[in-house]
Image 1 (cartoon, one colour):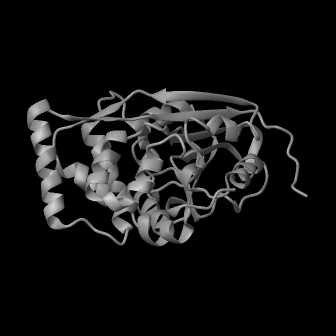
Image 2 (cartoon, one colour; image 1 turned 135 degrees about the vertical axis):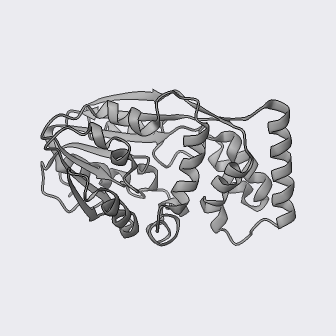
Image 3 (cartoon, rainbow, N blue to C red; image 1 turned 90 degrees about the vertical axis):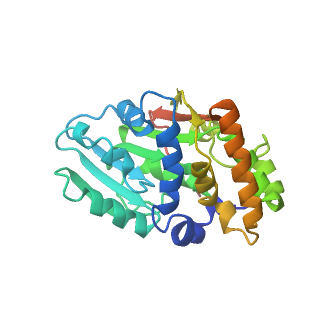
Length: 286
């Protein structure tokens, strides 16, 4: 197994990157404001779930609960929805937002690699852009399989190799010392985590039936500052080397000039949702 990276470090994720939703908010704002897709991401994902009355749902890595907050009026009656996250801060924010929604939400801090639920507990399990944070994917997927009912369904969203490629190139101008890490991110060599390119390979160990749905979108950004806010919300900003104010000013000016010239900065998105059904016979490890 490959060595965990900073985006798979549990301490960093809980106490830094996702201690609260502030970093996620900065990144989500770029997507919300400048997407070209007609249907917002969370609505698109919810459509694929096809929830019915009385469905038992588990979301692993719920973050601030956006999937449910943005679809609250569309949740069928009597669904039992358990929202978990590695970060206690995220769980607390989600609980504050949803506990008086009128739906049966339950909230709990949990690690997908060791889910605190009995076998065959859920009809649907969701991992929305979080499996690339998991250092031990085989264990996590076995846990998902364990808590799913025999006819249960698993939905796993992730990104592809080309996702936000232009944005990371801008990041190289701000953090040139992160060149090795970013070049790895921009290359096909970064294959140890859960991506669109290798997701089916990971999932087939547990699920016999797998489909991939692609989300058709890209960003057309008309302001420089949201791009900088996004980059400063990432793990790049947690490095020991911070850009000098002059460097930030130069990048800001360059982005503004590009927007003036081209009307927008176009940024590739490469995102999709794996749908998994059927469960292979489970063999306990020796």
